[in-house]
Length: 556
Image 1 (cartoon, rainbow, N blue to C red):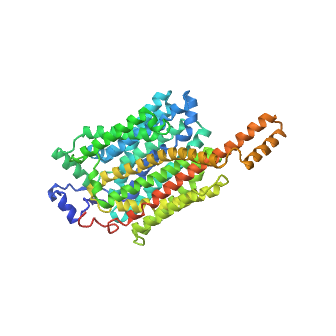
Image 2: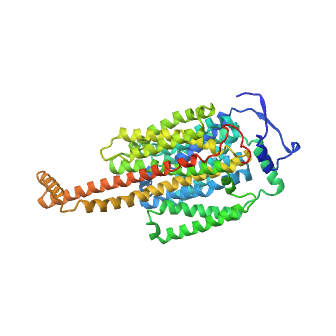
Image 3: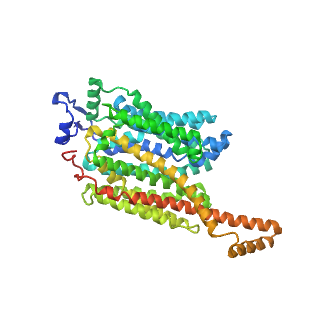
């Protein structure tokens, strides 16, 4: 690292932006001198903790049966280990920009890492389910602030013309971590104990804290913004906003995560949770738009490019997290894969993203391809991968699923970099922190909606297909009856009694029917996600023109 010094000054904004927002005079700007730090050191430092947090969203999934056995609880009870984390995460995530301004970005980020690490120890050592759930809530609170703050740090650390490369690193983290979580969780559980699923976070968290304290600093423009807000008295805790957003987020996450398990509106609890969520979200939107320093800055959605990018984050959250949850479930339930083998199907796609996301960043930075063109290619690739998945049958092997995931990874490799460039293309530097909260909120809510959708749609469509197939292939079908009789004769020749062989034969063909219709339900989910993806193509043409690496044009 160089020992020379560099003077950091706030990044200039467009003439129109400056006219909209009062800028401090020269005497008000505090110039800070500090050792020059390679921006890639900062990027790797903050990505480490974000990768750890995103890994934790999926690493515990395959360990639930072992946790239930170890703590002497039912499987349904231990599923709250996932729900409590997601709820706490959803509550904190939209507030991260506000807390960053209140406490300072570096201070808040380190507090989140510390809380996440300490509570990981609590999860790993928990003697009972109650303590484990309490630790998971606190762990979710700590983890909720990491990804948005990291994205804001990356935007402020790299100049506009080099941000694409930073976003490529961020892409690798947010896509790879959930993909390898089930594989790593299965390997740890099979070879050690479920407690190491949580304890593995401790050395990573400790390293992240040390690196952050040494290399990460709040930029001068951000410090000036905080100082100005404190001086004017505008930086205050919005209790009403926190309560409304917190309750709305928590209740909606419970609805999405528990809806199918509890039969949606057949459950009074789910119905009440949804009603509370709708009321609180409506109140939060009205309240936040009337506040000078809101918890969630919804006014940013008035910027066309940012609003379109936020919608893309939501849709791709649906397909990315939906398929990441569905593919292992499909392979385990219908093809007999072990958890670790099902997770390995996701591996090739993650490798494609790791290698190609930096390529996409260079194509944009060198001006070879415009972000809009790369985004169009991404949409088409992901749509093609979904249609490929939807054509599979029960004889499809590992190689075909892995190649389809590679095709899907090709689309994602060229998605997150251009959409991140588009999202920040017309924002002022002082808006970056709040913008990162909204984009991460959209991505996470997309993931929650995606997982809820595939859980519900796959089961409902299976029932529909089973009814239709049952009507088409009646029990009196001569071909079916002959197959049943032939199978019964085969079983009888291998030691079954006549009555048992007939029952076993009928059960065999009923199971085959269930497998086929369950597969058809999953295939319908792939088609729905493909349609949602390709339907976003018209939005690309509504993106306002901008110069890559430049400032916002006049009027924005």
